[in-house]
Length: 330
Ligand SMILES: C[S@@+](CC[C@H](N)C(=O)[O-])C[C@H]1O[C@@H](n2cnc3c(N)ncnc32)[C@H](O)[C@@H]1O
Image 1: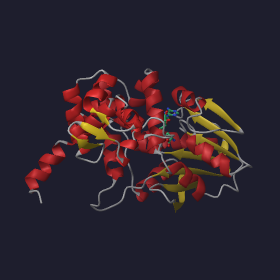
Image 2: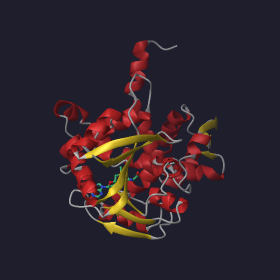
Image 3: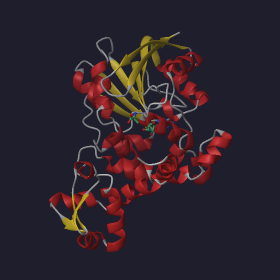
Image 4: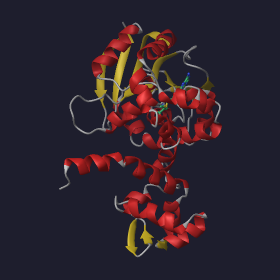
C-alpha cells in the first residue's frame, strides 16, 4: 500500500501516461501489433522513431495494461491497447490524439482559468475553441472523430430512451458528425431530420463517419444567430460547452425555432454530488479550461432553462451515463 505522499506523486505524473498514450496513438502502434508480437526495434523501424525511447514509453504503458512486454523489449497487444486500433468504427485513438493536443496545451495554463473563471484555451491560442477549430480543418476533423469515440454507446442509448412518436421533425443542434441523428432516424421511420452545425461539423457529417442520414438535410450555421425550425430540437453535449450566458442565448434561439407544442431535449451527463470518482468531473474541468463551459447538476439545468423561457418537464435516464432533459415552453 503506498503512502499518501506516494499516491500524490503518482497522480502528479498523470501527464506522462496521457502523453505516452498520445504518442503511441499518433504512431499507430496498436495497428502494428495487430499482426502479433513485435520488438521495440521493429516498431521503431516501422515508425521511424528511436527504439530505446519508444521502448521506454511502451514499458510505462505496459505497466498500466496497455500492451504487454512478453520478453525483453518484445510486446504484444492487450485488450486495452487493441482499443487504440484505427480500424475500429469508433476508436478512442482519435479522442486521445485530440484531447492530448491543443486541450493539453491549454491545461498547462489551468491556473489562469482558476484565477479568472475564463477558458485558458483562448489565452494560449488567441481564439475561442470552436473559432480556432474553424480555422484549423485538420484538427476540426480530428475533434469530430474524437467526439464519435467519446459518444460510444451514448447515441444509441439516447435514441432508445426517448419516445419520438409525437415528433415529426428533429433538428440535431450542434449534431457534429450526425451519429445521434442517424441512430434516431434508424429507429423512427416517420421522422425527418436536420443536422445543424458549424461548417466543420457538417463537413464531418458528409464523410458519413457518424452513419447514414436518410430523410435529412445538412445545414451549416451558427446557433448564436439562429436555429432551423422543428417540433423537436436535440442538443447532445452542446450546452456543457458554454457558460450560462451563452448557453441561455443558444436555448433562446432553440425556443424561437421550436413549434409552440414542441420540445427541446438536452442530452447531457448530470454531474453527481459527492466524492465518488466520475469521468464527468474530469470533463467538467476540461470544459472550464478549453471551451469555457461547465457540467451541471439537475437544478443548474432547470435554472438555465428558465433563463431561456423554458421549463424542465422531466429527466429521462438512459442505459448510458447520459440523461435526457426534456424542456417545454415555460
Ligand atoms: C461537444 S460537440 C458535440 C457534438 C455532438 N452533438 C455529439 O454529441 O457528439 C459540440 C458541437 O457543437 C458545434 N458548435 C460549436 N459552436 C457552434 C455554433 N456556434 N453553431 C453551431 N454549432 C456549433 C461543434 O461544431 C460541435 O459539433
